[in-house]
Image (cartoon, rainbow, N blue to C red; front, side, top):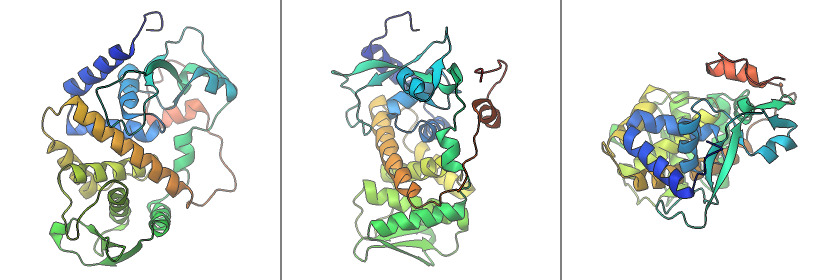
Length: 297
């Protein structure tokens, strides 16, 4: 691919083709999972990375790898992405003024051992510590959090903007409570819900998607009921949503989740000793195909 001239329009068409051909609720969740790993990338680029290298776990430019003491292995093919995009990607069709950039996965590099960002983010994080961090984020936004019994149709959580209060159902278990709080924080950052308004439609999909991305980033997967709501909300978008809609949704989710992840990180306890995790060890933990020996250390 590096020897073939690729244009921004080529990448746009590749994205639209991939989204149009592969859209399902399950595929949406897989793209969200990739977005949780490839923090800092636009949603369009997350899809393009997965299209070109599904097993990629950490992509960056050649110059960035050199600054970390690693170099791209000779003969490797780079991953083409669109540069110059805003993460929100509110306008999916226009790509004028953008360029084509090349990224390389950590598995395509060799040199100094590195600690992967997603390993560092999830190291030692539990649903309880993540819940505590999200409570801190709510406090920064000026919202208190309380538990009380909620009607089933409310969906496990609600936000009272007048009283500046987030209410979580007292019957939820710990993982569900953590997911519900992330869901409500997503609403606060993305939507203007009226008092008593029930979360539904695209608002529900966006909030559930942000919660999934945040929990996945920290290694605290959603429980069955929460993931069921996410799959259901994604399925209700329809069988073949337009690529423009998918990119807009994905861009808003990726941007909001990224901000929430950074805010939560400020409230997580810092470990006194950071364990070095070599590339091949982490790739093995992911279940990535290791037919080749991977980069030489």
